[in-house]
Image (cartoon, rainbow, N blue to C red; front, side, top):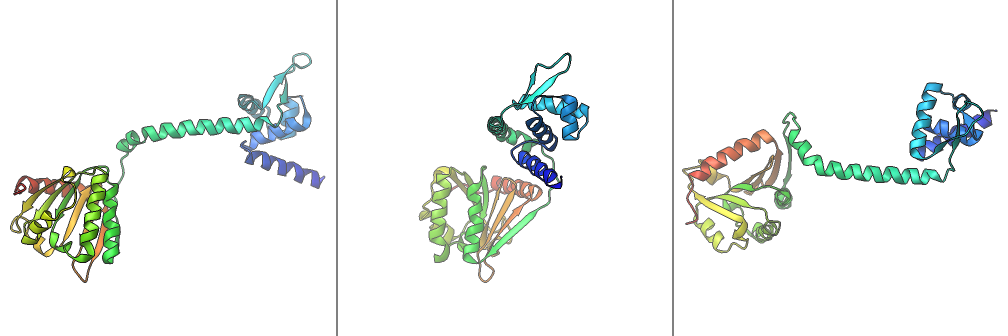
Length: 268
């Protein structure tokens, strides 16, 4: 008797793994073992109430796994379809989930725009030359305009110059527009003469150190886009890349950028 119960339990578990819920598996297994049966017979075998039994049988009927057949007198008799129907049932579920996934992907931007959340900044950073490059390349995923404040002198070293050209080509390839506030120095003027990026997606203006106090000590670059702020600190011995995700911080820096941009000199 114990061996029979164990066998039945294993079958219920197996059928659940094939895509049915626990009560659905119990009812379907009961029908497979009983053959055409009444609700009373099925629910007694499955160990569930009649009310739940009617509900489960209806669901199994929707799945195409159970049919209602002619019975004696007024009694309703149900019969299990061949187990081969489980394959079609799983295919139907797969197609339904695929359609649902496509709808979610289409509607996700609208849902995200409605999403309200506490702005808890996340910060990550990497040290060294490769760390700076890795963090800075995150901006190549941007789906919005990049706002930059740059002191070119930090980039104007062999470790970064070649990589910077490659980065700018990739940004142009991705059609990512960038507005740059450049600290006006002789090195910066020379840098632009040798600039290999496409100006089709780049606009820059000059700023004097008097306009943004402390920038001459920065020796790096700040990028602001979407809800992110990327900083490249390029002076030795503290070379590092920093990525901060914070809507509050990015919005403040965007506003300050626009204020400075409106007072900066054009490309001359």
